[in-house]
Image (cartoon, rainbow, N blue to C red):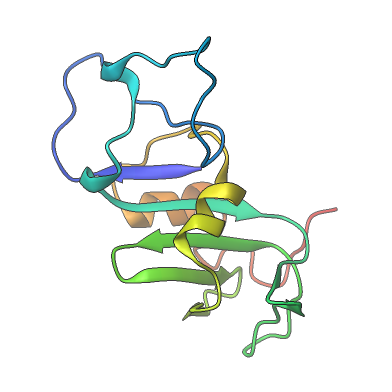
Length: 132
């Protein structure tokens, strides 16, 4: 679960995101300086290890035929799916709200998109390899 901040973060500040798209309970208030400003994020991404079903249809890679191990990415342009074989496509059937629901909490910060690809194993190095 990565996000990349367009503006430079303050020294020693570790941003965090809510676990779900719904608001946090009143008894658990995240400090303002630890919240992620979603307007300053250029992309968010997370790995989805199992099969991914969108609009009652299982996602399949048209390049290699994979049916699991996805990287789901949200940018200002929309939501994208990336396979381990590096094939990436736009997924207009997945709304940004559904993305936020699936993503969960932010666990790491990437300096750029290439770093996120390498860190999650979607840079082509694990093409055709599926973990159990």
